[in-house]
Length: 191
Image (tube, rainbow, N blue to C red; front, side, top):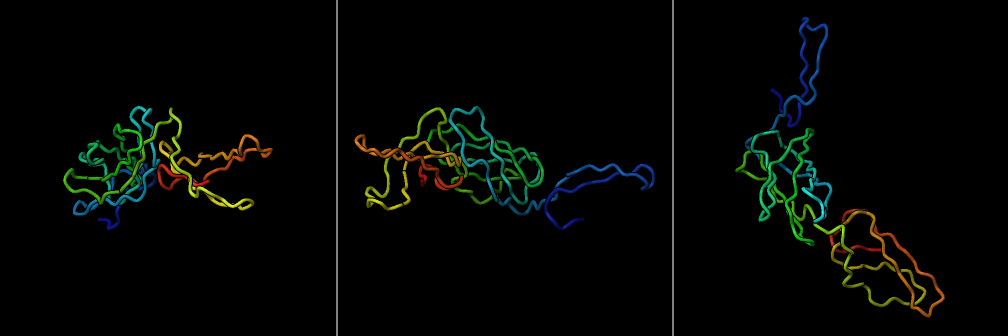
């Protein structure tokens, strides 16, 4: 009997322990009296243009039970696929652009983890971002500042760029800025 949660390797010998055949992650210890604990969801965004997008959920106290499930609230429940090491693959249900889906896991179909709010943001990779507001709206000449662009249909991919284009009568060239790293809020990026 082991007291730690997680996957266990099993080795088998047919010659009295001279040689062994090992099975990695042969079975998983979990505590059925407790619920899973979600630690991370990747990726944190999917596109409406993807067919059956999948996220990987790193969690504690999960196991490959028949009832392992990914609960997306009003968007419905899907079966989870245990891939070992505390990782579960969850199919993301279809959702409209701009939706932020929350996620819960279950190993018994009855008791659920705490909600992992805004686990996945949905955007449309085939459509452009829709800028709505730039903050601040005024910047003193000659100063370097950070601006926040509030927009729709922006995923935190780490490949978000902001282009500053001077007025048409200016001799200055445009400046292209890269946003911060992946993550952050869906729909707003700093550059």
